Amino acid sequence: MSRQVLYGWGRTAPSAATVVEPQSAHDVTAHLHTSTAAIARGLGRSYGDAAQLAGGLVMVNRELGGISPVNPRGEVTVGAGVSIDELIRECLPQGWFVPVTPGTRQVTVGGAIAADVHGKNHHVDGSFGHHLISMELVTPTGTFTVSPTSRPELFWATVGGMGLTGVVVEATLRMLPVETDRVLVDTQRFKDLDSVMSEMLSGDHRYRYSVAWVDCMTRGASMGRAILTRGDHARRDQVEAPTLLPPRGSRITVPFDAPSGLLNPATIRLFNEAWYRAAPKSKVAQPQGIGSFFHPLDGVTAWNRLYGRRGFVQYQFAVPDSAGDAVRQSIETLSNSKVPSFLAVLKRFGEGTPGGLSFPMPGWTLALDLPVGPAALPQVLNDLDDIVLAAGGRVYLAKDSRLEAHKAHAMYPRLHEFATTCQEIDPQGILSSDLARRLQLIRK
Ligand SMILES: Cc1cc2nc3c(=O)[nH]c(=O)nc-3n(C[C@H](O)[C@H](O)[C@H](O)COP(=O)(O)OP(=O)(O)OC[C@H]3O[C@@H](n4cnc5c(N)ncnc54)[C@H](O)[C@@H]3O)c2cc1C
Image 1 (tube, rainbow, N blue to C red):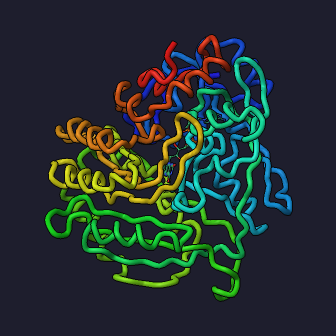
Image 2 (cartoon, helix red, strand yellow):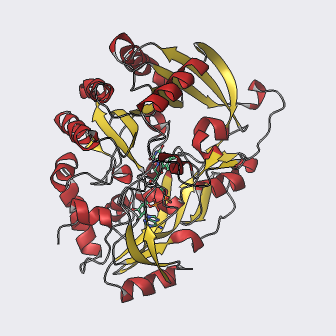
């Protein structure tokens, strides 16, 4: 047990809490019985304040380990503290891959469930929660095994529930069979936003994975120019000397905070330009490793230090297909502002999960990395909120550290259903977080 200052990955909203590492479901129960305010934490890869609780108890899940053998149907039972990296290392050599992976392998299964993470395959495979068979959940009122058929309302509130329904200690999920450790990738460069969006609309259904990197620093005719990469796992007969090797670990570490201001409009513009030019105009069926295709940022440990002590905001939103123009408006807002942005990530979404805090909706999602510092940033973010709200969209809570409560309530109109489930399972309101307090997710 120790007192620690905790941050999210964006390092913008620190707070101090008592930190413990429960070893078992029994330990979690004991902590919930003796504290007045508690929340689970995984590897701290949510960007904002979801996995911290000022003055409360933060239960780091990493000791909740264990990976069962994968059965012939691809089902595996894992401790909630196991990371996606560890799961891939264990299962890929046996021909099984995680059904959904976010842009980093350094997240825990517990964190992946609580944020209901999505990958580049949401338009085909949905989010992490769609592949869960069951989980063991410790709550202040008891320990339950929940699934889509056993206490479904609690199961779906926990999927995407940001840790507010209890602590997941173990989960059983269905893995994806793969024949190799390669992905065959098609790459195309597009001169503007309209052309890449129209290609994604008409062609993404042909690919399991799809993502576009969009340059938000260009204006005029080349506003939103983009690189689109799409692909699927290679079969054995599609690559020379097929293997099933886990991805390599990171080889570079950022040892200290970069000076604030290193990432400014000029340097980011240069980076975006180089990235765009380095991509082939068009390339088909290029074999890429799991690491470079899914988790390119994992090659550099602690890369968030490049943003300096002030940190950065990741702003991710989803909007329905009928409001695709909101993507254009957001990128226009950014490119006309003095706020620099690294290449934004644009993806297609399919259906969300049934829980009241589910983020995805059929349509578009855009994620922006914005360094803290420019005076215009708060206003630009407020303008983006307005665009998203007017479009009937929502901001991703796993990345948020600054949204206002009334906006969150408008973006998540079924929040009251979620809050009702939380109140049933936790009548004394023990489970909480800085995020939940700021956004009044559970009204007391
Ligand atoms: C480089 C990078 C790329 C990313 N790319 C994506 C992406 O493509 N798609 C995407 O969806 N997300 C993405 N994310 C966000 C990340 O996947 C989520 O924030 C994820 O929840 C982080 O997992 P974690 O183990 O670090 O959890 P933390 O950040 O520590 O916690 C996140 C939430 O999970 C809860 N939690 C943790 N463990 C448990 C548990 N055992 N039981 C109940 N609740 C628990 C916490 O209370 C908190 O609310 C990315 C993050 C980074 C840094």
